[in-house]
Length: 238
Image 1 (cartoon, rainbow, N blue to C red):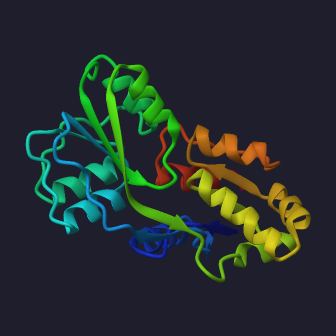
Image 2 (image 1 turned 120 degrees about the vertical axis):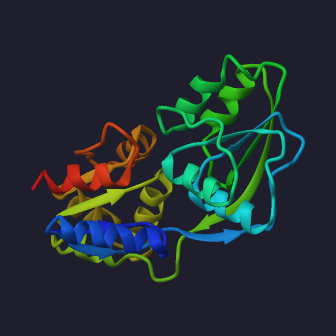
Image 3 (image 1 turned 90 degrees about the vertical axis):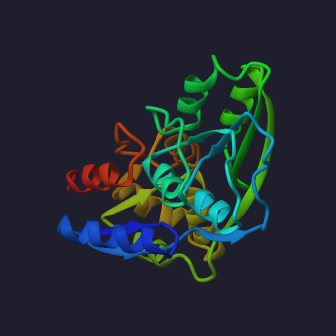
């Protein structure tokens, strides 16, 4: 079973490959995201500071930012772990590891407060709009940009040849970049047809929505936005 995985080419991709191998699949490592730090750091005068990814936590720590008196919020266990590895106390991790989950956890607490959202350049407006609607004064800092690596698209060729059995999309941007890679090769329609013959997994509802709007048939969305759950669910489909 050839399973395409699109995580950035770091320990996340290595861990994904190991997991898929342990599940008896053949991983197709095809990174669709690369991280380009901006050099910015979160503001230090906020009542609440939100970090949305492991990468964001690591970059903030590497820049020697400190939370101080802010209430530190992390979306997901991996983000929280990166913060704790930096020696910070994480005050809130929402039960649902999504932007809407964090809004639900904070909406009764942030009215009139300053909220710093530190994340990538492709963060969902669900988070910032939701916090604004809850009465917060929201400031966003872009810690890093997400770009498509040069040469990405091995799995596109497999899809065209009907040799792709499954694909694991972990963000809306991985879907968009995959389709862009297909378009650049002049094979978007054939690649999309091949992808729709495979088992397609999306890590959460926003990724699923992006995929379906682009004509991708989504077969699996795990209960939690967790890569291991996604991989196990997809591999169990074949």
